[in-house]
Amino acid sequence: EVQLLESGGGLVQPGGSLRLSCVASGFPFSIHVMSWVRQAPGKGLEWVSSITGSGVSTYYADSVKGRFTISRDNSKNTLYLQMNSLRAEDMAVYYCAKEDPIVGRVFDYWGQGTLVTVSS
Amino acid sequence: DIQMTQSPSSLSASVGDRVTITCRASQSITNFLNWYVLKPGKAPKLLISAASNLQSGVPSRFSGSGSGTDFTLTISSLQPEDFATYYCQQSYNSPYTFGQGTKLEIK
Image (cartoon, helix red, strand yellow):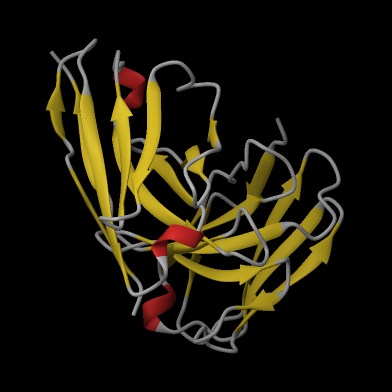
């Protein structure tokens, strides 16, 4: 059974940093593209970032480019999102998601999310 | 960026009703359209990929159709567990944008 468990969310001041983690199990983690998707309060879903299985290639939404860094440790089956220079508009539930290897850019499994609150 | 517009934003219906949610893309996305359901406190779930491909384990009362710019998600007979928020997503071009969501509520 595929499981994705996010952690690391919490309260941070504007301009601060936070690192999210997502531990994966139930599938061969190292060969799958993984992504972060967020949902701000009262808003819809927004794709944030993706990383290839090897970790060599990364992709970002314009809204987070230069501030967020996605990475992975395949030996630990763990996906990360380092978030720097946080803004009020980054406040959201952050979901870790696995991409369908055949179709691509389709998120076939998700975690339950971790809440990031940006406030002074 | 490709804009995805869902309608309606909210919908009240009764158990047993047939409901249809529409998703329109700002440009052609062929069939690169996916549907998800979100329930509070739960992991989002993929229902349909490639416009009409029902995911394994998803009840057959769910169906998807469309191509180009216009797509629909249909639930043929609403069940109590279907009251939730539904999102479409295009996987044609980066950034892979979502619709704003349709909240399905019990009448």
